[in-house]
Length: 266
Image (cartoon, rainbow, N blue to C red):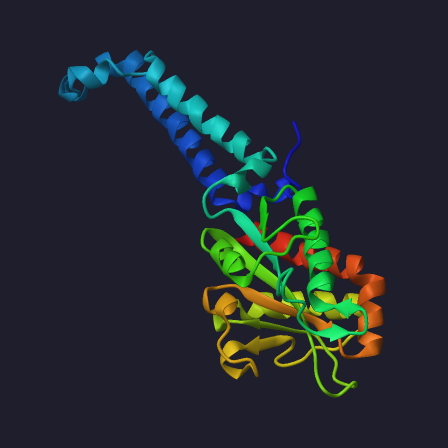
């Protein structure tokens, strides 16, 4: 049986604490009832006050043993590695790519934003699934569904992230940013830092976070519905584009690590 990675810290988990507490309670209850069963005749007044139906449930009843066993098993079941826990309602990660097969997004020479972010989406998805998480995407392989399909994935997800690349008139514009609602500020900053560190770039905005209300693009459907948009650098900056093309798998692995840690704490 494979245990969860941090099983030594399992006592911090509420499910383990509650299960252990109930198991301890059953032990105490069993001991108390056993004493009553053995020595109840020495306490006639107390014993007489105990209802007959309660007496019938005293320690020799299989009900107590089943209750005790149930709680012990609940502790061990929580310690067991269970990737299937991520397959229920509200327990999948939505990973999408910006633009679509009919909308290339920003372009620099032969490099198209939509193609680059599809590759990144696929790489992040690979690492997340390798870690046992359930992932839903807006396409597989080279398929990149329109924005409407990506937005639909947000509902029911534990977290939804879409990837884009920035563009500017100035070839010198650079940096990584994640556009998100204030509630997702910390995650946005962590995602931006992961990409910036992997690609050797800098953080834009508030340590990598851009509040949608301050975004040059204004209100964005993906963000307004609860998702985060990670801008993976400037496709218009030749150096940043080259760095992305050379190291995007490394950046994808770093992004996946952030999301895996986020899911553990969710």
